[in-house]
Image (cartoon, rainbow, N blue to C red; front, side):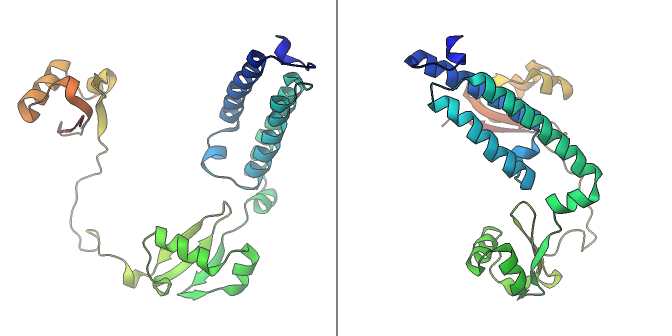
Length: 234
């Protein structure tokens, strides 16, 4: 465990051990912080990510620094972070500071220029984000909001929205999310059991309906009507 403490010099293996320990410790820390810190960065998330990254970087590049102090500091910061998240959920005043209300950038096809300056973003950036959402004309927008996590939400005017089945009062079947029953030639037995089918049924369906064997299947999904969709190795 000498690699764990500050040393005048470290061997190549000790550097590797530091990296491995830090890697798995960061995974644990991130798991404790919660999925929200991965999916989006608000003010709290960004601050804690920068601080933790800076703390763990030093003992990984300086043999004179030990891992113990860095790990204790990171653990304390995570406790502070989780406590802050809880406080944000409970206090509307602090929540408003950390998660401010969305800022309108476009209203009824017109730019709200003063809000562009507040958000410190350019018109070109809005055009780029609009292209990602397949919006070819900003005049078609009823509203564009600058979200607290740095993304833009676009709302197209009803006049330019596509007609849906609901608009025409056409009844549709309930949404059915297909489940993976075969992955890379291996049967997902738990999924098959939930569907109430046996492996023999699955193998027979592959042979009869698709003329393939299990080993040739890269991916196969099953829906509520027991229809198989099969993707083969190519």
